Length: 348
Image 1 (spheres, rainbow, N blue to C red):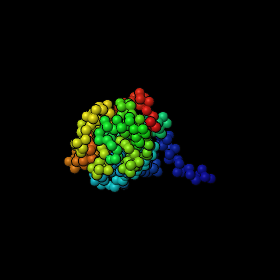
Image 2: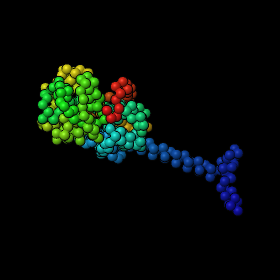
Image 3: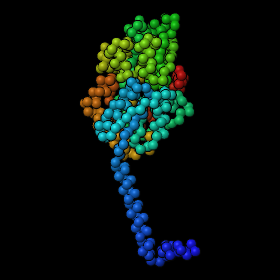
Image 4: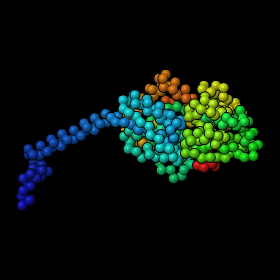
């Protein structure tokens, strides 16, 4: 009985399959299917064209107050104005920046979750951490680099040294080693490795999850020595709560014109700069990545934003996604060789 009941509705489809002229029912079904398909296509195109239509989130991989956080908030300010949606910064410190980086690597690639990427989690972690749960070369769609920043070597004001040479002499002659704060995986770890290799000094490493905690401990006289990106420590240098000995860059910083470079201080092989950029999860629509890059680069070329970066001691980069990707690949290869040649691990 059920077959006889549905037979009249199915017969036109059977006839069409045999090549018989289609009935009105069949024509109506095909027209409905076409209309639905066209409607879905219009909705999909409209949804893509509407990006962004909700808040965007930038994951900073270190503690608030550090350079990674500063640059994330600069990018958030740029895009909130350019894209007319809220752009929020969330700090997810831990595992030398790898925790927050993994969150973005596994996030939905829709343009609403971005990474404030930097040296350690992107360029050195693949070698330092054999079981890294993400691949920086494959799991991200680079958007662009905001700036490169130099590192500075500084001490507590009570330490009886006024330059880098005196610090080395003190480290070699003092009975107990100088206490040095370190966040593994970042540029300061490699800078202090260069300093040790060049001078032969011994330091007592005190590990930290983020630079803000280490900086606070140095200000509180719980550490003797620390190295960090200039933007993170510039207010303390100006306020006199820390004493800077050298800038680890090829040229003096305009923000610290009286502070010598490491080369001028007699240590030309002690130099590592950091970079800070934005990445999206792999698979993010190219049109979204392109729009993010274009609005970022336009802002970086304005006198206002350029001045904000330079006042922090940084240098504007403003590259393309393709240039950023090439830079990442070259940096991974470069620092992998440095790590292997010098037997550097995530804890030394």
